Every structure is written in C-alpha cells, then in structure tokens.
Amino acid sequence: MKTDVLIIGAGAAGLMCAITAGQRGRRVLVLDHANKPGKKILMSGGGRCNFTNLGVTPANYLSANPHFAKSALARYTPADFIALVEKHRIAYHEKELGQLFCDDSSKQIVRMLLDECAAAGVRVETSCAVERVRHGEAGFSVATARGEVHAESLVVASGGLSIPSMGASGFGYELARQFGHAVLPTRAGLVPLTLSGKHQERYADLAGVALAAEARCGRQAFRAGLLFTHRGVSGPSILQVSSYWQPGEELRLDLLPDRDAADWLPAQRAVRPAAELKTVLGDVLPKRLAQRLCELDFGNRPMRQYREAELVAIGARINDWPLVASGTEGYRTAEVTLGGVDTDGLSSSTMQSKRVPGLYFIGEVVDVTGWLGGYNFQWAWASGHAAGEVA
Ligand code: FDA
Image 1 (cartoon, rainbow, N blue to C red):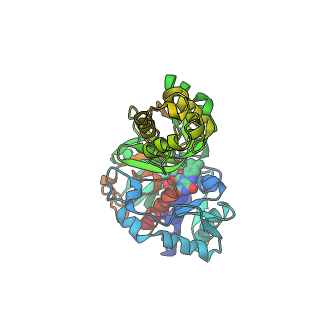
Image 2: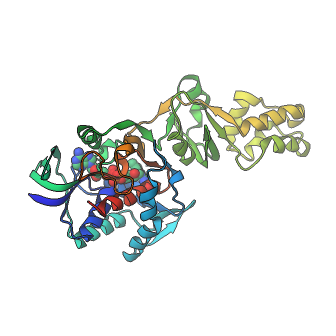
Image 3: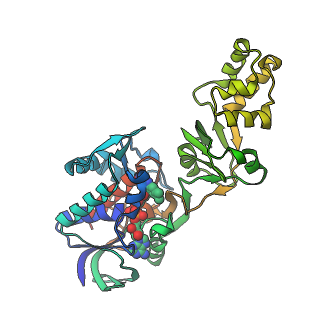
C-alpha cells in the first residue's frame, strides 16, 4: 500500500499532525498498535482532559535545549486549539492557573480529532503493530501487521514510556537510534515520589493528609496541593517538582506558603500563651501533620514555655522543611517521560530529522516535557501541527 504520510501513533501529536497534513491534501495513514486511538487523551485530566493552558510559554518546558520548543509553540497556540474546541461546540472551563478542561468528557476531544481526521480524508488504523522500518530513495517501507506500507514521509508520534498498560513503548527511541539520532536518557516525570527507611517512617501514618504547600528543588518552586501517600508524597506540587528532582537531591517544603511562620508563630505566643504548640499549628495545618511535626522536631509545650528565638526557628523550619525522597513511583504512574529524541538532530520549525529527509519526530517522544496543567498536550498539538504543515 502507498501513502504520502505515514504516522506511527494515534495519540495527541499523531492525530493533530494527521489533520494538518490531510488538510493540505496529503494522503495520510495513522497506525497505532493499541486497540483504540487517543487512549491517553481519554484518561487525561481525570477523564476531562486538561487540553491546554492559557499561560503556555517556553519556560514551562524541560529540554536539553530550552529554545527548541519556541518556534512550534508560537505557531500553534492555545488560542488555536481553543478555536478548534469551540468549533466543535465542546463546553470547557478554566479550573485554575490557566488550565482548561472539558466540562463533560475527554471523549469529546478524541471525537473532535477523529472527526477532523475524517473530514481531512485521513485513515486511522488501530490494533496494527509496526514491525520494521526501512528507508530508501523512494521513501520509507514500513512492515506492519497488515502488510507493507510505502510512504514519502514518516512521522514518529509514538509517545513516551509512561503507563505501559496504555500502549506506551520505547519504539520511537529505537527508531531514532536506527536512523542515527541521539536519544537522551529517559526518566519518569510528573510522578509521585517515594520515601524509604527512616524518612518513610517519619510520615508513614500520615497517608491521606493533604495541604497546600510549596515544593522546591534547586531554583524551581511549585505552590499547589501536597498529599502524603502510603509510600511517599504526591499532589500537584510534588508532581511538578519531580520533573526537576534527581536522586540524591534534597527537596524543601514550605508547609505554610502563605505566611511567614517565623513572624506569625512568636506573635501567637502573645495571643495564646497557654495553648500547646500542636494546637496552634493545628489551626493552620492538618492536625495530624501538626502533631507529627511536634513529635519529630518541635516538642509540644504551652506556647509561653517556648523562647521567642525558638519559635522563630520553628517557624523558619515550617517554611523550609527538608524532605529526603528515595525515588519515584516510576513509569507505572508517571504522566510523562523526560528526555527522549535529542532536539539537536531535529529542525525546531518542522520537527524534521536533520539526518534523514522525510523523517519527523513529534510529541512526547522528543526531549521536550511540559509542566503539569495542559502544557504537554499543547506541545503535542504544536509539534504535531508543525510537522503536519510540511510532511
Ligand atoms: P501519546 O502517548 O498520546 O500517543 C502515542 C501513541 O503511540 C499511543 O496511542 C500508542 O499506543 C502509540 N504507540 C506506541 N508505540 C507504538 C508502536 N510501536 N506502534 C504503533 N503505535 C504505537 N497532559 C496534559 O497536557 N493534560 C492532561 O490532563 C494530562 N493528563 C494525563 C494523565 C495521565 C494519566 C497521563 C499518563 C498523561 C497525561 N498527560 C496530560 C500527558 C499527555 O497525555 C501526553 O503528554 C500526551 O498524550 C503525549 O502525546 P503523544 O501523542 O506524544 O503520545
């Protein structure tokens, strides 16, 4: 079988690329080994798909080359995707921090993409494994479970390694290496962190306790929810910071991010001299956490029995609590894969390989990873669109 553009992966990036190329009149075939397209879209955003973010900037992405994403992001913006969503009359809302979600279901986003594919004459085939890819003068020959496909352009949109049960595979990385591309080391991102040994014991029975906190790693700080789990810590602030964290690095938590606790706590001594410290802290922190902090570090006496300097030090520690993580929950629960196909080998305006004309890499398989909050889909749409304009 012959086609102009063969796209491997019917996820967010692959479908957007297919629509864009199909609208240019290219014959497009999308193949996916999973039994249905857009599985990660379906499970995203708790079933409501956080499909973009109003505040997208290149600074919201991690990559060995922080400039790489600029061109594609500038040429296909959140407003472009919102216009598509509105054209399909999909109701949506801003949840917080510019994150846009469907009011109803992420199924609507997959339906929209498939309708656009159909309108652009794109064929999407699922449950079709790709076995081998060869490149010659006439383009690409791809052996699939349903026979050989010949294509002028080959777009690799096979995603990262997170959630293997959803069809994730290392196929795109293998293909990149086959064609001489460097693949930067991959690791799980936007993922809960685990604690071990004495560090786990300190918080073990706090599982289920949630609070607003700022998690910091190096120069990065994220203020959002934090959740203690049976094995460690999770919640948006931890997921965000996990992408910047390397094993062995210490994390710092601001457990009272809206207050200067070193100021506030001594003032409380004057107001409530007879109250125990855990009671005072329990008014602004989850009670179980307040009690545990007292057990671990601060002691628990009536406020008047603490010297001012002690309360200043305790307050400072609450705003800068150290946390030693041992690892992450890994690809099983990670939202994204960091690292991937080295952007040095790709054109930033088209995603085309600098080594093999007609070969493109888009979406999560590329070493561009967004923050939590719709940034990863926006990269998938933007990089898919960039390749679709030329493939
Ligand atoms: P994607 O993974 O979507 O698609 C790749 C496709 O390639 C899959 O369909 C796969 O089956 C197929 N494939 C893989 N190997 C193949 C092979 N060998 N042969 C054929 N096909 C193959 N982001 C965001 O912005 N907002 C959100 O709300 C969420 N929520 C979210 C929740 C959860 C639980 C996860 C795991 C992830 C998110 N994300 C997210 C991240 C987002 O889902 C992700 O970044 C994009 O789906 C990446 O799009 P791609 O098209 O690159 O890969």
